[in-house]
Image (cartoon, rainbow, N blue to C red; front, side, top):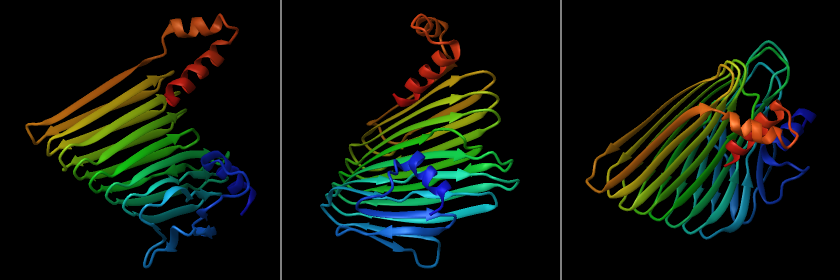
Length: 306
């Protein structure tokens, strides 16, 4: 691995020089390191770039790392990863991505992930995105997630874009069986002329299934964000969609939550709030010795981490 990959890994996947357990490190479209464990098998996908990851039933307290890094301009990395999580497993998946631009051409990573989570399994999925470099080429990350949750399965997704990504188009679809639960917390920061799009579509087909979708975003400079969520309640179920955004400078946010109730006992709620940082928050922090810029940054960090 090169030095840029190591720096990006530290940003997006808490890399400390090594991973324990199962991992696959992707660098500029090729494998830079791989290891399976006794209960987690990582194999190359046939007929397409990417991975097939099998997590054995009742695997507990294990983590699999699958970070991807683009380290220079003129790279368009496309990868297809499939996760098969066995019945009763309880695992963590860490799937950070970093892109680095050093020239005039675009640096892009497009990760297409499919999740098949079997009965009673629980997955914590952590995904952090970041961009670096001073090249004029755009830094793009366009993730796609397709989620299938069996009976009583739970998937928690914690996705964060911490800065430096010029363009991102994030698409997530999900299907939930009886008593399945999907919990998604998204945090996005855009600056300057950056743009970010998030599109969620969740079909709650099982009885007593539930989804909780929360997006927090900050649009600074002249950046623009679009948020669209669609929850389809096709059975007795609960669904919640929440979009909270802060505008700084000339930032713009368009939020469009959508609900469809196809069953009399579907209980669905959506919330959307867009505003600026309250002046009294700035004043309070300035009385503690912070500059206006430091106070603003402290408020933004706390907002995105909640």
